[in-house]
Length: 237
Ligand code: ADP
Ligand code: UDP
Image (tube, rainbow, N blue to C red; front, side, top):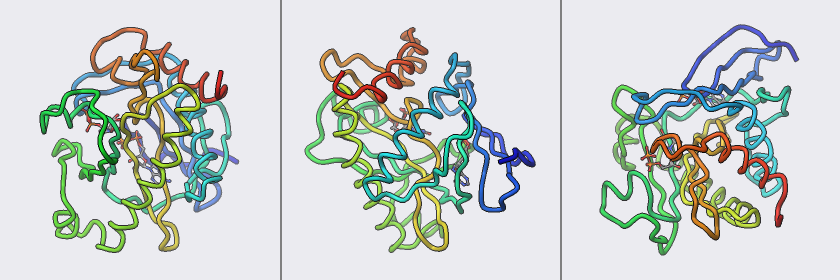
């Protein structure tokens, strides 16, 4: 497959066309941002690590019956993916209180949720990705009621598949963000699942092994990303 016309550069990836009209070339970058772009930096080898992790996780999700955009890994930092018509929404699932949930509703960090919490955010950098409810989404025309129900059900299914997958690897899946799109009217998981978009804590020590190390200047950022990839490749190690 040939890399074609440059289409889009985001905070973590660059998208190019290919000779196939329905296939995108998705290149993962080492760039890192936090606080809605206020903090910027690079994380060594992040592009490769995140491409590898997404490839493994999406294959696991496909085996579990979740439709994803993944076609194949083309090179260390590149995934070939199906072109989707993306929902301008971020679906967040939370198993353990952390991050904005702690700030917004005052739960203590680390509190296990009685059942997973699903939240919807508007994907809009200028507005700072606000939390929205179903009525807001419908008012904005971003998804129908039926689509919203399908998005939430798909996000819960991803959580049901990924919690045990990561626990087998000694990682607690604290929370994560998903982006979905549509292909021929069907809802398909797009984007990535990586330490940029998930919180992972070591099951025993509760050490943070994700982008919070960058957000909070904890050090050992690259090592944490490498450790997640190592564990993804070595379950039960
Ligand atoms: P951002 O745009 O949030 O800065 P990225 O740097 O990760 O994020 O850019 C990737 C962009 O590609 C995102 O806008 C995401 O919604 C979009 N995207 C992800 N998967 C697909 C896909 N299969 N088809 C079309 N767009 C996609
Ligand atoms: N997240 C993300 N992109 C965003 C916002 C959140 O990938 O634009 C992920 C984040 O890494 C975490 C989960 O979604 O795993 C919940 O994030 P939270 O709402 O706590 O926001 P934060 O305080 O991390 O910005």
